[in-house]
Length: 301
Ligand code: OGA
Ligand code: MN
Image (cartoon, rainbow, N blue to C red):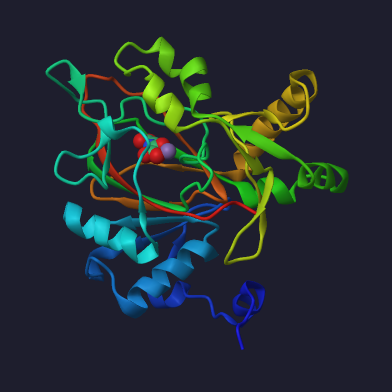
């Protein structure tokens, strides 16, 4: 008999002891010292990581991870097929599956996505099947600053009132990549503009505002100031103030964990139940370089 996700969940034993997992905050996240793990992880070791990610509400930090770009991609593939970023210009020259997140300039051009994610967002929520997991690996870091913040969108949903939950459960929201350009990237000279080709490749899409996690069966809020522009069928005067409320509510301090990166940290997050933001507080002349591999997801429901 095929168990539903909720039944599976109820039978599970917590994996924390087996992995020496430590909670990172009251809000979300757990951390593991990866010295004893062999990458890419296989079999039961990988299954424990996958479950730990769900148990930690969609955020896992692995410290001291020694892996090659190929192993990074292989590890991501265990979660599911790789999703490439819509903008090809940010890809690693030898590994197109890897998105380079960096402020480093070579020959007057950034080597990857510069100023990536300096607003609250869920990766690529502007496509019809947004990615589930992102795996971000730190290779060069500024001496101080450049933290990444994560917000627990299960908690954000659960903290809403009954009437608000019912209203949001009945509406869809529009997600649009060009919104990030209009409100943010267009002001930054190093960031290449949104080309008409890329614009055509990523037209605005609709998603439920409240989605249900395919494994945990829990509901989470799925809107972000990065890409969400309005509710379907509602004028901006109506949807704007509600969205503004939700954006502020989603990132209340008690829903947030702030990650201070160390070299060779691998941070894995679930884009369906978290938001994240890159803190723009470091000197751009100090190099920061991370590799991201992103795993494909299904249609949010
Ligand atoms: C990302 C992202 C945040 C950061 O890679 O998806 O948003 O701090 N990065 O670099
Ligand atoms: Mn991101």
